[in-house]
Image (cartoon, rainbow, N blue to C red):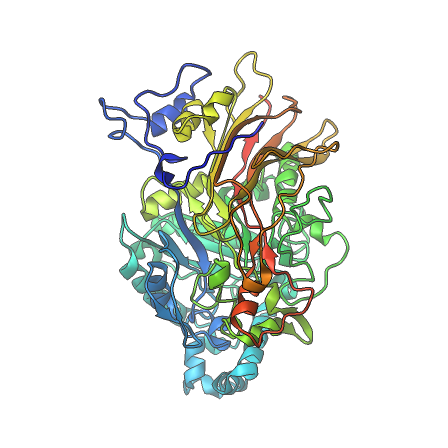
Length: 639
């Protein structure tokens, strides 16, 4: 049932090994499309023709710097140039004057500053004469100059004004916006080093439709400065409606010949709008809407600092891992939710609902892959629990963040301790270039984690055999006999009654061992109703499921007082071939892999151990169970 492999030193041979001299054709059907895409062996050397990625590229596509208005107003002074130096592994000084460095450099980064008033809050802070004629901007200038709570109050008012369409006109001039955008792309371009480090061009379109209902999207460009500079980013001063945002994406491609994609995030703060079956302005969705959303929004941000959006525990009571870093008090302005809103906010529900909408419209609008990013507004991308730099400058390391507020809208607060040190994206791109990373994102061969660098492979097919999980070249077998994460299953060969999945993961050497790998399945039953079930595919140790099929807890080795743990439980790697035991070929379905680590200390435990004056309340979590989420693989019956 399970396999354990004690492997730490040979990381390059697991899930990333070069091709064997021959594709494994001894058993099972070979996928010609995958062979053509990933295999090319001109001679004896199996490495000369290797065309698939042998290890994931790590980074994120959602980092804010001082060029975002709310970040600058709250005290952030780390700009895009410093943020990119930091991503490449250099030491920088944080906005609170502390030195900070990544444990390991990233392979790529996208600075995603808000397009609204891009870079202009600095002018307000500096007291630009023309801007000081506006009493609102003068008040903001005074508050930012005072700093502390006054600066935080300005930041909150900016967010409220932006969501209500009240930003002063002096900050929304189109010419000034384009000028700032071209300065941004110049900075990003200076850091792009193909083959070594990729600096992606992008921005965040920050719709807070209806007053704080989070409909934010990050725009990822495949292009360089030459094309990106031809159009200023879309702002919410022009529209807050997603369908009009999609029109802008089309107009960009039409005008420039370039390519873009969009990544929504924080459906958990949308108060029921992110995955609703009507538009934000109350119009019913239709086939064109479904086709357009599916065209542009091929990814979804599964986890970040403001909560994890995989699934809400109230919607999946049998999922013991669903209650993870949940933010469900309200929308971005902490306006409380009404009954039913949560049903339209979480990724797993959307993936299931997409199957239903596909039956109605012919297109699945929620057929997305999964990524993770921080959404940090500090210019510092930090996802490690012992190296966490918060959301805003006020939540950078210090004893005061044990009791501070991350958000405070008219007394409706979210505490700093609710922030998560999350998330990160693994991209199976064969080259570290903009084009290769973007193309891999577009085909959804990506996965999100809650911050750790778990290596995760997930392939689906009809002919994987148990012995395939013993091979040290699982990628060779995976591409040769199936399809990778983010794909559709091939039609079943004659006589095949259920799909098989080759799934494997290896621990982050800086984090905890692995507890288990699960397969999450969603489907439409014969009555068209949405269903889901979680299967434990492979796990560490000699545990056995109980009478209800539940695998016992692995336990914990965390010493909270010392902010330490041991890797005496769990496994450094897990791999298995899993077959769906309840497959019905007549029903639409999807599958994704979820890798669970053993418990480790949360950033709050590291703070409590480091800052002796930190006073966390008794109900503050001190441990965390990190995880990784593959993009799904979809199945549909032949039409």
